[in-house]
Amino acid sequence: MKYTMAIIGFGGMGSWHAENVLSHIDGITVKGVYDIQKSAQDKALSHGLYVYGSLEELLEDREIDLVTIATPNDSHKDYAIALLKAGKNVICEKPVTMNVSQLEEIMETAEKSGKIFSIHQNRRWDKDFVIIKTLLDQGELGRPYFIESRVQGSRRAMYGWRGHKTNGGGMVLDWGVHLLDQLLNLIDSPVVSVDAHLFSLYSDEVDDNIKIFLRFENKVSALCEMSTNCLINHPRWHISCTDGTAVIEDWSCKGKIVKLKADSQMSWSEDIVYTEAGPTRTMAPRPEYTTNILELPEVQTDWSDYYKNIVNVMEGKAELIVKPQQALRVMKVIEKVFESEETGAGVSCHI
Ligand code: NAD
Image 1 (spheres, protein in one colour):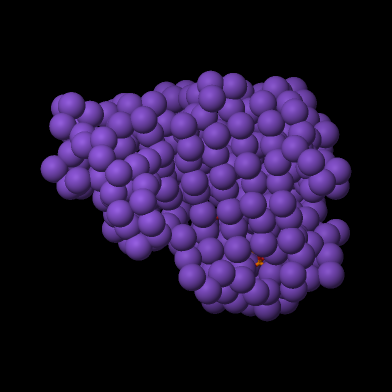
Image 2: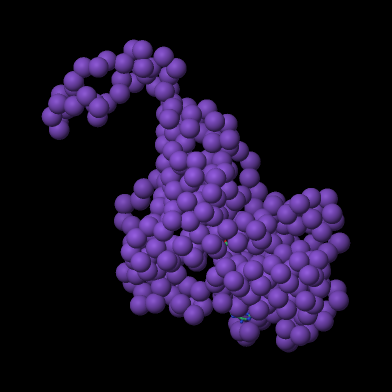
């Protein structure tokens, strides 16, 4: 085994990291865990992992090349800086920090240390996202102009520390980070305005249902929405392009593309149609012979590619896929999200 890793925070995500790395990544082994809770320490021991008695013990462990931080969001910055100063390569869970200035502090430290610093934006490898990215890269639906990206549930609660502001809870800093990171990777243009509607329906402290509208300089607009109180879901993705529409219903990636036939305008009837809602020309249903229904592109995705990239970067064979600069851009948009909610208006920017 070439590289040895430790994990700080062995809860839901920390144990996922251990399992994922141990089962899928040839170049890395997981040695141990640092967690402040006895139950998490016991879980680590039961997985055959070493449990560090203090952060200092971990920082001084010369065997450790790489540390993944998977603690609540308010502790990411101090851990990342201490680890980088101790000469460790660092992966940090998302949201990397609570705000832009904290991330800039880490990036400065990372630069001085010469060590790797990356953020676990694993949802860039989600199948639904990769299908949409492939579709837009292929460009066969014409120019995209409105992208809707949603995750919707109805459990209402923000569980545990996610319900507390001081811990960096709330939906913007939870799923919001993923959906914004995906959108910024999908649309190659600066964000020029952010209009956010944040609701705190079931929490006194944090947002739990959110809608964020983004306008990009290249005239693409996007909506990302996350709900904990949606009892009739929208599709996971709905993409409007000049020559077609694509939909992905849910994480199973069922969906379809409806594309205009090349000669569809020629054979289009201009007649008024009488519908249940009365006469209409613009909203009349389009005759089926003017469109083709197509399958979504087939894609192969694998979350472990994140760690494979980290191994390749440590070996000097590749560049980081998830770069701190990209996380900084997401954090800048997030600051505009909170500003928009505070002012009750859209916020202009160039991010
Ligand atoms: P969790 O509550 O399940 O686990 C957190 C663990 O950290 C617990 O074991 C807790 O004892 C420990 N901990 C708390 N404070 C600590 C401290 N100061 N020092 C050391 N250990 C501490 O939370 P989780 O769901 O695993 O989330 C952890 C991080 O992972 C968060 O940043 C979250 O946003 C992120 N996350 C990312 C994804 C993803 O898909 N990338 C999914 C879930 C969570």
